[in-house]
Image (cartoon, rainbow, N blue to C red; front, side, top):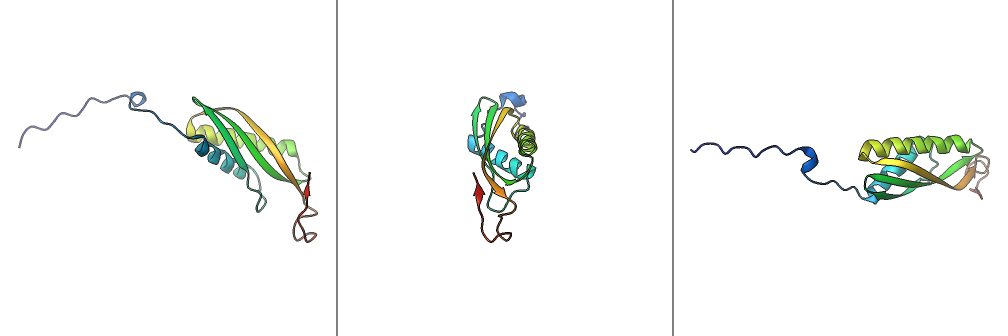
Length: 121
């Protein structure tokens, strides 16, 4: 047996390679974070789209919410959770989270309450 080979010199983590996280993956993280922030109605799953440039993610979340509710408070909770979760999971900055409320569901017209599902627009 010969002498053991010397180990290669340690390369600092920042110089070992690159990490790329696709927009689609960040969008899934954002949509899950929106679900965590809300009591989501069955079938009313939040959707997110994301644009990533360098280490900055710009997020747009589409929601369906119960009505009546405090829409501003619901949106603030979603924004905070999306920013927190995306930054935590990806180490990207999230300077903006735009929210589209696509549908409002009246608690009085929900299935079971009146027998059919009507959406307020």
